[in-house]
Image (cartoon, rainbow, N blue to C red; front, side):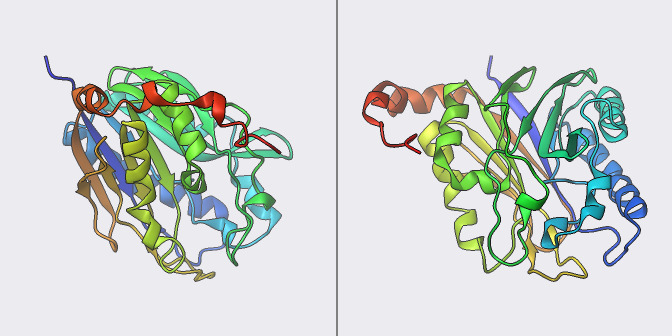
Length: 289
């Protein structure tokens, strides 16, 4: 019996560009995502991933403590509780990236994973935190992740998460493969002129090197008042051969749906024995501080 997982990605523009009331901004973005999540479910998706910190703009374009108030506890905060209800209603696994508060003053860039019964399975906290290039001041907001590279056993396959800037680091992508990932989602916020030439290079390379599926998500549009560049969308799925099998436009809200043949992972690994032929005992310099 073939193992086919229908998966979805949601890319979305800012609902209230230029709005300064953060309560309104957050509520509007959540409201905007509800019909997109429903659309993914209506198209038969078994799993759906949202974009990086889906319920707001990419606020790391500035450094201001007011954004701390948008962080929530996981899994007890209102957004994750809502998403647990939606997952149960739609019978769909959800990967939900939000701004997490562990305790007052300690915040993470996190994705929660919820199964189709509405059960919280766990979270991934972004490991690699940029603080470079005008408009990407993430160390002001995020503590580096401390939970390793978990892989979640689900009815849609073994799911891992890698968030945005993480994708520039092959080490974590390999950790996810070693931990058994079959599908790795990478929710992102990245702009043209900075990373677009890498967008269709790095993640297919991770898919090939680690022989799993990758779902790459990017938001769309420009975000006031910062205008750090155009979030160029083009969310996509690629297979273990590095081939892009479904892709969104660069300039509109969209739900990308693809059927992922998980049996292809075995087929590819039967040909390319990368895990067999690894030489970890020789990679002594990789973890040298």
